[in-house]
Length: 253
View 1 (cartoon, rainbow, N blue to C red):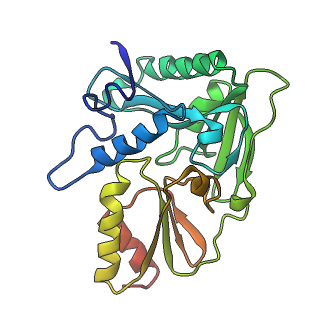
View 2: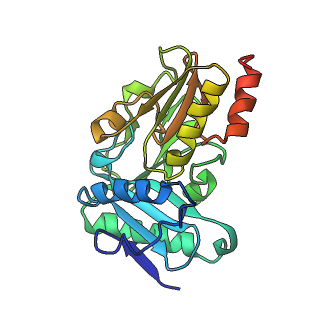
């Protein structure tokens, strides 16, 4: 199969893998495409398999990445996903190789990605990244690790910004940070807001809307992070049922 690079010229016609089409009343696809369209001019690349499935890589120069990292001169992978029937066919290798070669051609000193020690939802498989030569550059609480693949021995060591070193926030209550980098936040954030209200709970929501806000955010995973009374709860996008389970576990319903 062939690969396609989605850009400003074809984004209206091409699907974006993790949200191929919207159900009635949803705007997941439109939200993500609008976010991508703003990032293309900043050097973002979205490359996917020419098939209806989740097989893609999305990356951007680290200086424009929507994460609190200090990785000048690197290319940062936002999202890297090969799922279902497409696994085990070499597509991940091809996508990553394209990213690495593109980064080299653009004069970058390496590639970075945020993951964890053990595989978890919404983060790339750390075992695969380590297998491909990625090294640990920095770690912060709640099992967030900044991996990097330097192209030379002289490449500087990237690191997380100081804003995320504690793994906590000062604000009490239920607090959610998110961006529209993931199309599913457009659907599930309003659902959580309604669910919290239904149970008499206040959910404070911070939508990160600029690069500067993302790079100074109190969470390493700006796409979606839920806190409760200052403590990290999850980076995995919650359904209503799962959110209610969380509320119950805290004695809030």
